Length: 281
Image (cartoon, rainbow, N blue to C red; front, side, top):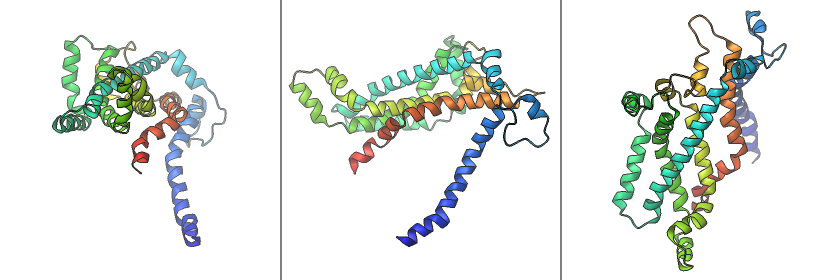
């Protein structure tokens, strides 16, 4: 045991600390740059490591003066609607193939179909989807993003929900049937509460996926009426100018929303992701 403890202190711990510094330094640099004024950024050839006069001016400019709070609102609405539609469709597809006596061929076919969609690169379908969106007159409309994000996240939802539903004993639903409950009633009163941590975990991960998506939001939207926040961040890079502190502030805002969600719900995310693993042990 002493040998292992010594090996941990001499080899593993410094390596972990080094990896931690490598991963955390970009985040620190983002925070430090966002708190600097334009004078400090332009007045030093070598950037200062610590802000000399910290200010929230860049955040005020990004959100209020340049009106990017509208893009932030669009992102929240689009991602929230995507989570709701994806989980609803995921349950409607996953429940029958998991809880009802369907053929193994159908079950495997649905899961393979979902898996193949998950590996589809977005750049391969952006042009056909652009045509579909224009035909449906949904160009520059948030509904188009909800539609696309739901299609892309549905396979992930199906595979996650399948694991959660498979862990709920069939005997619990059969007991509810004996007491006179119909299948919808048993689903809402027995199954749904048991898979709630899994639904929350899947919802947060889908929200994070949709929040960070950039390609479709760039191609399918044109005005602040429908654009999302990641599209607004790239607008800070122009041909003649690059406003570092405002760009860092926008990047930090884009990072904070899913990070706060993940921290607040980390217990449910871990419980959801390890739901099946713990049962199997």
